[in-house]
Image 1: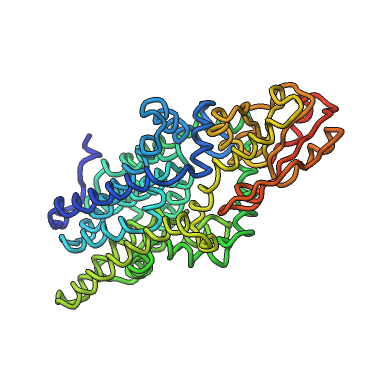
Image 2: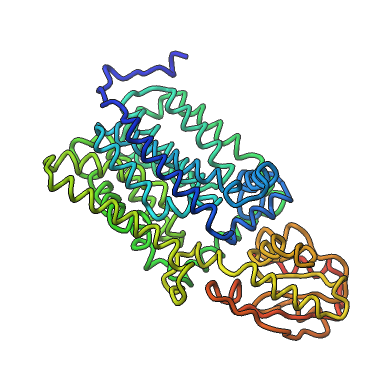
Length: 497
């Protein structure tokens, strides 16, 4: 127990927590996210989580168990409503607001800095997006925020409890996503190179690390038994990222954009700069270098732009404290903040809702807006095609993309469709379709199915208003008949990460 107590001589006092201000910001965000959660259509990955929740396992091809489990609980306990299923995402975003304010306090920020940092996090497009949809990045971003807060807290207090809680936070985080390992590695390397090296002599650090490693065992065991599909997925994600507008050249601009159209973009860049340069934050300089290393790592490895979202609370907090410390408390500063924050909030909301309301805005739609469009319409089109088949009751449905199978499983039952199957990513592990001589294939190209059926012909093409071609807009529907081999031979050859 002695190793958990503070061992720093006379820790520097910090301003009181601005609980009323932080609670007000968190409450306003909760109301906004509740409305967004209720009004936004299901996103493709959410539909997959709902489907995966009916195939509960310690692991999946693309993630551990936590998110499918939360989706299953939300569907079973809360009636499957969008708001009910997305409640965990709302709560993680609200918690992120509070942690961002606490980070600013740890840096020495008073009520103004705590409020500015928390408000900037609350109106970030990434916060509004991930906080109103059940996605892995919602939990991942909160885990990064909590970890960085505990690291900053340890620097001031030198207490073992903070180090042990870092391990507890990691043990939860790795049940949703493994990106937090990158944060651990960057902080470890930065501490080795520039300090504080004292941390490596603390037993609580290694106890927490052991707890996190132990929590990884079920998922790693599942991956081992299934020949490590997650590693094959890394290459597929890199190719997808390179082929879209979120490729390497757009990585940094998009990261800054989703931090905040005005306020967040400025504080993210400024906060990172001050972590690297400020004498007042010299004790935390290793975190600045860790942030820089993380950005470079994701840029070089072809990661998605939102992978850095977990750094926003740290940089917003540092930026807010330094900005208010270095500028005079004048009416002009208050007026500037009073204009920039509301304008940033309005633009963030518009980025999410306008593409779904106005025609012709698909080119500027957020990826989650495009990935949420048209699923009921696609299910209608597949149902009509299925009803026109000669033996529709015995014809299974196979899709080329796991989003399509997820959507058809969600919307298809009430339209008379059988359960959907897909050889794409995690859906492949849910098993092949039942034994039948024909299938209805939904997707851009039946591909290898052509070699396993005597006849393949296109029946129709569904045109959606907004979405991704071949996935939820401009989707051909095919009829494949005359199967020439058993499914247990065909299915392994169809797997696509």
